[in-house]
Amino acid sequence: MTEAMLSRVADHLYWMSRYLERAEHTMRLLSVNLTMTLDQKSTRPEHRWGQLLSSLSITPPADQDLDDYGVIKLVTFEAENTNSIMSCISTARENARHVRELISSEMWERLNSLYFQMRAADVDAVCRDEAFTFLRAIYDGLLLFQGVTDSTMNHGEGWDFIQAGRYIERANATAHLLDVHNAILVQPDPDEAVERYLDWVGLLKSCTAFEAYVKIYSADVEPRHLLEFLLLNSQFPHAVCFAIRQLEEALTAIAETTEKRKGIRVNRLAGRLQAMLGYTSIDEISEGSLRGYLADVKLQCAQIHNAIHDTYIVYPFETALVS
Image 1: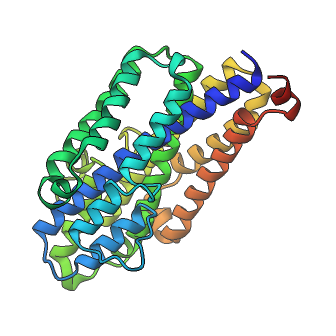
Image 2: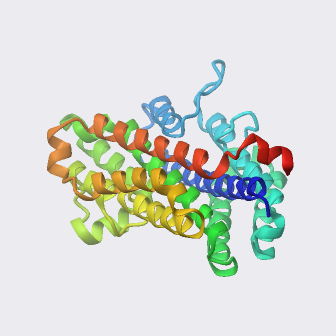
């Protein structure tokens, strides 16, 4: 296989994984926020939906009202929204199609099933009455795809690119989620103590972290502990620190199966971010600027992504001509 072909394979596997991770993250945030609209006061639904869309980097059409129906449709099915669940699964499937011979049959079957499940959905029924059931089914399908991938694909270079895509997407998404909710974490309003507590619980549930958090800190959720858990915990799968450690391991494995010197820069960038997360205490973050710290994490994620692209995806023009 030529260098150009290897680069294309890496590109498709990396982006397939990123888009599926993005779909799962989007589904979780939407499900949690739908539940919270039932549990909390309905006095500020536009604020809650606006915050959700900001967390997902989605800009709603100017003429669209931020009601339950409109937001569910936009976030779940809207084809023109490149971050919708439908768009993410469609794009992931298209990337998988290009490397069909390199992934397992079980992976392709699960991804195909997810895609056609989305296509066959009654959009009006889902948005009005069946959102929870539908989103749960999609979530189960996404988790099943991850399990099938880990169980049926060779854990070689291709699998390492899938891991790299999954964990860089996860780290960036969690950091962005915390950034959007910066105000309720840094300056909680004592006059809205119950609302704030439910918001903090919602943040944890958005990262499937509430039960794991309670086992360490108890159900008395505090912003300081929440940040420590979702940013710096090295054992919880959706914490930023854990995700970057997994990313670094995947990139190290890729470097060992390719030219080691080729991966020096990208591995150094991942190692630097891992060290920053591993050797920073929550007290140091609290004494400084949380937004500044999160901005630095997101910037370094972008730098790692660019380095992955430049190192493993881009190939010389001459190579492209030969292939």
